[in-house]
Image (cartoon, rainbow, N blue to C red; front, side, top):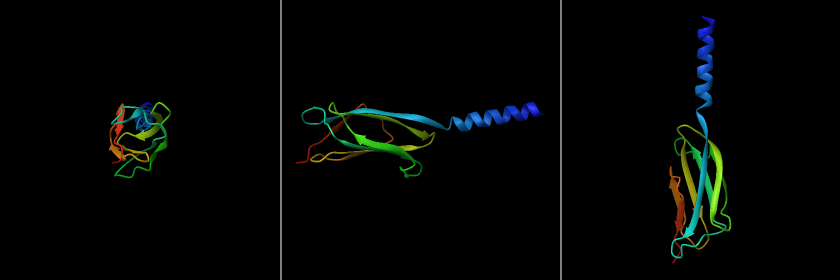
Length: 108
């Protein structure tokens, strides 16, 4: 009986440990008109349940090549939201997407 209980506890521990995982974000932001990389684009990545995207995530800026990347912990059923903003460009909000490239439109 003790061995079955030990196995059950081990399996439950492993299954709860696997409920969280690393989620990687890695993309490039380009000007949609010129196709050139955009530096210093603000990016906010959030994750959570029931549209509460403040349970996990991070933020920062694109580098000189327009690249933004990072890793954060998520629950198995977490939804993600990525907000992309730059002055003189139209902002974007992406839900549950992990694109390679994001194109921002300049404001008119």
